[in-house]
Image (cartoon, rainbow, N blue to C red):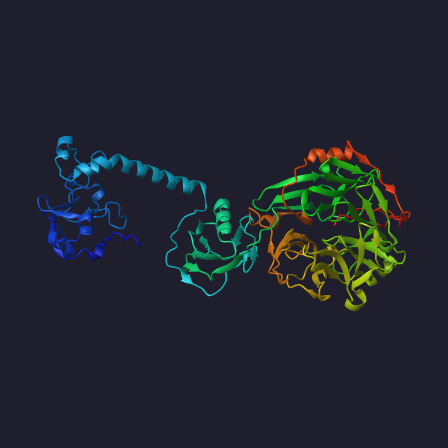
Length: 638
């Protein structure tokens, strides 16, 4: 119910009955104040005419009317700066500062107690005073501390505009998880005040009112709202006030809260977009339900060398592997499991866990970084590569002929969820001068882990048919879709402006370009454990830095508009000089400490030296090294 507001009297409205205030002055009042019979209850509270002294004062008559007014001001507006300071003719002379005392005449307790209605007021007066003091304190604290409020805010009567507000990041028309951190944003509309109301189909809304266009949503209220309305729409009503037009309300932003949650943590590598020095880089984990980011391992802990290719077993934060590149040519694999951290003294490239946890497929690449004048200047050339298998249970390495053919360069291994197929990419070897002609097929091969038997390679997407190069296949948890990159050439899509995400339907063998792409490079994608979300690195914001974006995938395999990983400060990415690399979704926090991982490199408690089994290993140099001469860079990081 709307609270009625008390009427205000303005000087031009003071007309009607005449009431004497002094012998020399008469003031006209409205007719409804002329007599007690014609006044309503609100009017009686506002003021009353005292016939005894001709004054206009408090209706209770407990407070006596002042006899004189300081500065010659009107008795109806003592602080009205619009009135002249000089006294009109007939007014009493103004008081001096020493006489300027308007304190009402004090009465004795007996006199006040004799007033019939004073008892209930005196009974509740201490409580009223306490409420007034508490309210004043809260108002002061709110004004001094925060720019936002989680309660209703008066936005006036705004003008409605039939256009969407401009927001950064663009969080409009998206599907978001019910366990994501607040999608803080900045309103890209000019104004002096901003008001955002966040609501769903029912329940109290979240109201953020601020003088800043940066909207930071309270975490607890946001989390409660999303969890209570999973599967329902989420509405944002945004209003902006400026001096010219007052309040303007934009078209309501409508998003959808998905029923399915996303894995709680995201693990990624942060590094500068350099190519001639490692400087500072590390692997970090971010709690997607909050804004907390913690280091998993930073390179300053072991001599500022390189670390990359972190890979998890079935999204388990307690079982993972990552590669280390050191200056002394020691390029081990760190293996983390229930038995702690082990250092595997074997150089491996791109990694893929078999879902059983017994095998890790890896690539052995001869990579070189070079520059050219086509689009993105940086590029990676893979002179020779093969795939191998590291048997975790027996600490042995094997290079099966089916995935290590001499006429092909094989790379980017990825197991199917049932472990019965290994997907990878392959291309015919060619010299670096023909780098624009090197294009990879998407291939798979069957495998029987119980009998250790491999089938024949099968081309799933042919480079000859597409005219493009396939990279980074990732199979959905239900085994239905394979999301992969297609770019103009090569096998390193993060350096390819042309790189887009495609989906191959394994039931129909048809592939399609996804609607979530942009005009910049898309790469490093990863499925969630429930198959309803995908995260990928995109350079769409500025063409230079890769940022993590999320997209919802429904049961029909439709991919929805992607949204940027939220940050507490909406302007975070505008000043962040790191690129986000290899984002991986995991089902909880990584508990192994950074100290334990660093110790596993420098002073390991357990060292594993794999033995060769079966076919001899091909003569391939470790990834990131080259014997092609000084013109080839060694440091390959993206």
